[in-house]
Amino acid sequence: MSEVEFTAINHYKAMWLYALFDLPTETKRQRKAAAQFRKGLLQDGFTMLQFSVYIRHCASRENADVHIKRVRMITPEEGRVAILAVTDRQFDQMVILYGKKEKPAPPAPVQLELF
Image 1 (cartoon, one colour):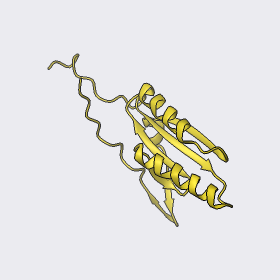
Image 2 (image 1 turned 45 degrees about the horizontal axis):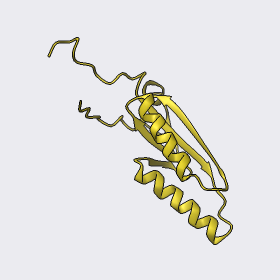
Image 3 (image 1 turned 90 degrees about the vertical axis):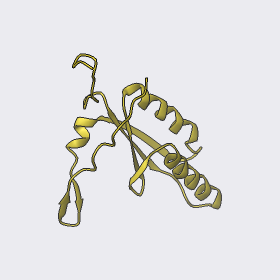
Image 4 (image 1 turned 180 degrees about the horizontal axis):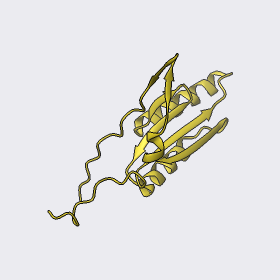
């Protein structure tokens, strides 16, 4: 395979989706809806970064759009959900602090592309 044929994941094309949400949990119905939403995020490949912040790696903007539509479909009737898309390069600049100790951002997952 020549260099022209091989294309690695571009750090400006690959995206990270952040699902940030505040959902009401005052009633049993609201708690159930919030739990189902979080489970839906996990089933769609999101990982919890913080209690109301989940992240997911996407190989392209088109792939990110698919997951944004899925989040829209599982969003509860009440509450607020925001989705933020950042490039892989921007994600690499994230600083995560655990107490006073700084830890590096989690590495981007290895993506296998089949044609």
